[in-house]
Image (cartoon, rainbow, N blue to C red; front, side, top):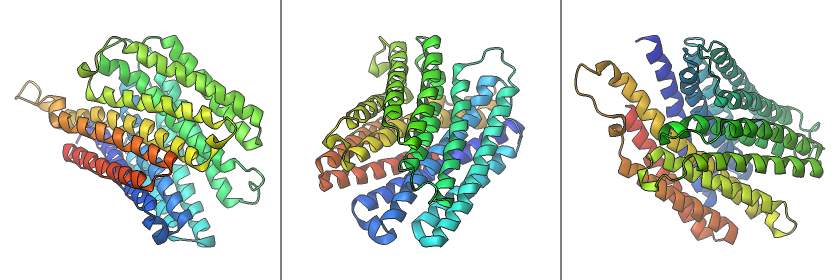
Amino acid sequence: MNAAAKDENTVIWFFKAGLAYLVVTLVLGALMITGKGYSIFGPQGAKAAHIHAGLLGFVTNIIIGSMYQIVPTMTGTRLYGGRLASKQFYLFNLGVLGLFLAQLTLTGTLRTGFQTIFGITILFASILFAFIVFKTIAESRSKIKPVSLLFFKAATIFLIAGETLGILTVIFPKVFSNMLLAKTAHAHLGILGFITMTIFGAEYQMFPMLTLKKLKSEQWAKINFWTFTVGVAGFFLGLMLTSGLLMVVFAALLVVSTLLFLVNMWQTIHGVKWTGLDVSVKYLLAGQGFLFLTVGAGMLMTLPGRLSTYSWVWTHAHIGLLGFVSLTIIGAMYHLVPMLVWMEKYGPKMGKEKVPNIQDLFSKRLAHIILYASLISILGMASGMLLGNPVVLQASGITMAATATVFTIDMFRVMK
């Protein structure tokens, strides 16, 4: 097996691990909304394990694998370090699995101790990931420096900062007891700083490519990068200092920056009919629609009154993480996974024998069914949370878990 094929195999490993955690996350979530998850694992253990299985196990595994594929492609060079990426895969997933099991099954000082050990393991793996990405970018052979690379570099820095803060809040709870929003700051560094910035960077590369359209404005993309980076840093500072003024000012900057991203994307695709779009683009557009709703819900939550209640907070989180993040990732995987499999299995046979097209490797019809089932499930969950209707919430959550399982099986079929 040549070096390029080994790199592609490492990417596939990250994708397979991420998909496994997607199913675990949604099944555990379905158990929680029926009450069974809390009765089996306890409220705090189930909630913490659910969140970290989703954000670290599913989202971060997929992002790392995607960056290991996209960054070398954009820079025109090999992924730095050879087998270093595969070692990073094992280190990272050892940490994620250990953290998940510790949060799910342990309590008291034992839980704290194992959370610390596996949290530090994840942090070391993330530093190694950042090292590989930065070195790969530094060895770029291309004179063109895509704006996406700026987003990727900033995102890895925010990932390390967020994980470091998370570990510190576990090790020194008394130090952070007076910082009421430290855990919220930890979450937002990960969700806004790492995940959202990575998605922005990836979409600036993928969206024009998949739509065969030129990006509306490269300059807008650069403005988006700087305003969003400053917005994340300032919002984090406001949370740590519990400063309402800083939070409002930098939240407003984040809103403006996000709207600039959305306008850039939508102007790029202006005039193209929905029926003529690649299925991956349809997922990306659906994700962008939920990003818009997430921003709107976040703005409403700043208003005084009932809109800052528990139900609104969790609705805001779920339309962001399930609607924006998950649909975007699924859409990207419908492009990346078949492409990687085709390159490994059929690329060497090109010109020698008849080979299938990339899109022949998966079912477009099933991809559309999964998309629409996901949309209905996510909107149903949001409605159930806001209306306090457990029947709608449970039915939608179970449907979402089943839909994700079907998607996972389909991707494993493609990768076999």
